[in-house]
Image (cartoon, rainbow, N blue to C red):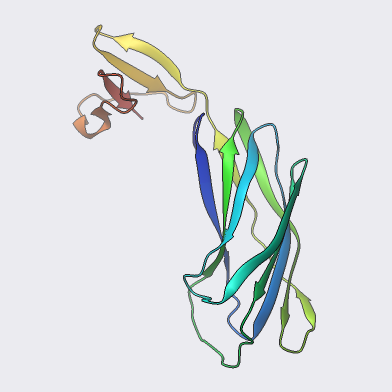
Length: 168
């Protein structure tokens, strides 16, 4: 959940660990809510991967990632490994599904295998701002129906206007 205007970077993960030479996927989203700004490889786990190409057309992102060093060893890891960071620009309010299709990987045998994917979403909420006692603002979302001012950790100048804000 985020608000306008800002960019949001999301990381794509995989549980693959053996002989990966390439990964490709399509990601669809609502272009009225977000736009793709950039796609970069995430080399936290796979040190020699690179985003070979990506293409964005009307709410559809196509990504091809290659491992530039032929893997020769099996690396066992229970944790998911990051492979790409996708930066979105928030352009509208609402909720957009991030739906993966045509997700595939290839190994050193050059056989292509379909991958199981897990979709996600980005939700951009429109805050409702009103004055409180003339010296504070409450940033209010439709999903929130209560405020407890005893929690002082939520009070501070969040938006830089010199006034304290309550953020829930």
